[in-house]
Image (cartoon, rainbow, N blue to C red; front, side, top):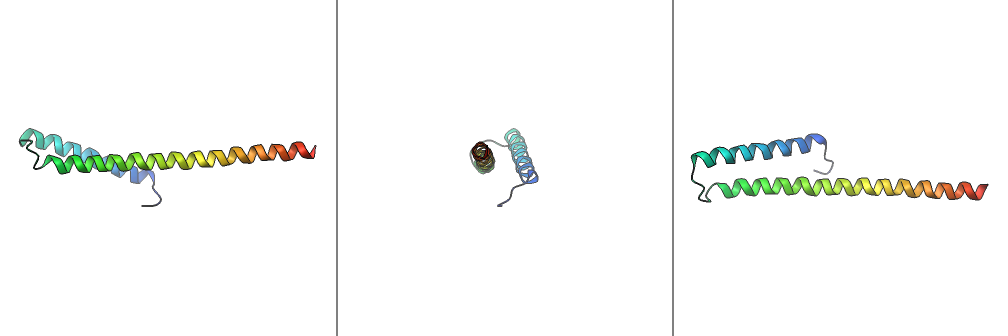
Length: 84
């Protein structure tokens, strides 16, 4: 997925909630001997790590855009001062 939308993140968060519910239900009916819980926890960890990394990328892109706008404004001020 290259271009992530809010819907993508929403579906990932929904899947995490489903997996957590599945884990809680199984924990009440099955003994947690590691035969079933490991793959649920691994899937939850992987999805949460994915969300965290994508949020970091979005913040970095937003920061880069903000920085370029600031540099543009500063350079425009310099041009205006030289013209006066």
